[in-house]
Structure formats: structure tokens, C-alpha cells
Image (cartoon, rainbow, N blue to C red):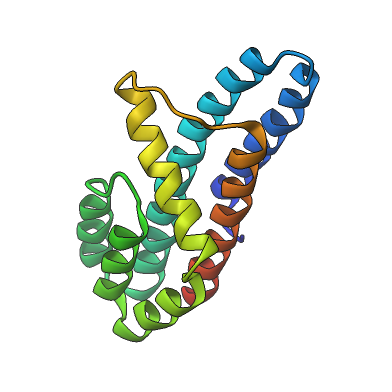
Amino acid sequence: MRNQSIVSYKQRLDNLFVQIKAFAGDPELQSHWAMYLCVLTSGFLETSVREIYGSYATKQAAPNVANFVKNKLEDFQNPNMGKILELTRSFNQEWEIRLRFATEGEIKDAVDSIVANRHNIAHGRSVGITYVRIKNYYDNAIKLIDLIDDQCQ
């Protein structure tokens, strides 16, 4: 990750993931923290994808085109893999093909689960998210962000 705002966001999340370990003896409290971290991880994905593609547009396009792209990126929400791949294809069809191949399996499943769980949490539904599960999802989200960041360099 090269974007300083993404790095800063990641550091804040990393610190929260460390803090949750203090509640290892209280499964209910740890479960509530896991839900909170799921929501933040979804926001991290959304923000990171916007930042990376917005920065790419700023570097590659005329200022008015870059502004248009950044404004359109503001509408990008609920970043499941289908939406991320669709957005990637908008920038470069070959990138989408490579990203689809690189994320098949665990990364795709993690990203889709983050967004699905965030949706259920936001609507007051019960979710079975645990610290171990959200940590694994988060680690896979980082891999995705690194892949997208590498494509835009």
C-alpha cells in the first residue's frame, strides 16, 4: 500500500484488532467487537478502492476527467467482489480478468462475507462473526487492496 490515507486507516484497524485480544475471556464482548471490526473493515475496503482508483485517475487523466472519476467513485458502496470487479473492468478489462483470477476462492469469499455481514449487522440481524473469522477476512481484504494498488502503479 502506497497511499498514506489507506496506510493510516489500516494502522488504526490493526490497533483495534490487537485491542480485541484483551477480551479473550469474555466471548460476548469479543463478539460485539468482531461485529464492530466487520463494519470498519467494510468501510476500509470501500474507502481504499475509492482512494486507489481516484489517485490513479488523478495521475493518468486531465484534471476535469479525474474530478469526474472521483465524483463517480463516491457512489461506490457495499464493495463485494462483483462490484469491485465491475469497477476494475471500467478502468481496464485486462485488470479485471487478472483480479478475478487472483481473488478466486478465499479472497473473494472473505470480501463477500465482510459486506454480507456488515449488511446484516446494520439491519440488526444476528451474525455469527467471531474475532478469528473477521481477522481472517481482514487479512484477505488487505491482500485484495494490495492487488488493486499494484495494478494501478
